[in-house]
Length: 132
Image 1 (cartoon, rainbow, N blue to C red):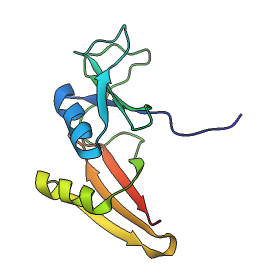
Image 2 (cartoon, rainbow, N blue to C red; image 1 turned 45 degrees about the vertical axis):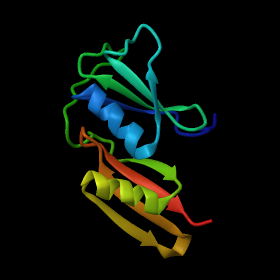
Image 3 (cartoon, rainbow, N blue to C red; image 1 turned 30 degrees about the vertical axis):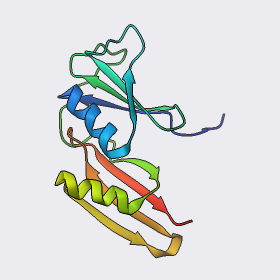
Image 4 (cartoon, rainbow, N blue to C red; image 1 turned 120 degrees about the horizontal axis):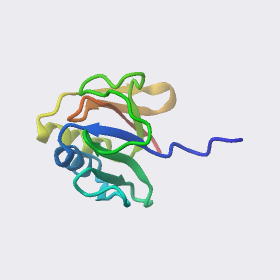
């Protein structure tokens, strides 16, 4: 058995539309309807440029195969969700334009620039920008 890549992250959103818009606007992800039996009123999926549904966004009342209590704020045992990105300056400009809180850092040893920010439901995002 081998892990090939991260498949997706599931977020239980207090406001489905706002959370979907956040990921569409900030990360340029394509928001689409989730497949049946889910509906556009209880689930939207965010796709990357390769057509992979990387974030499944569900409403609080969306039916789940494995249910557990979730609430806005810290994401339980998940500390953060990391995305490999391109265009550090453009991302920083988007965050500034939104008035978003974020922190940026450079790790010179491996040519990594990082941005940390929260989504509307308190999920910590780590956005990684590698040089070259």
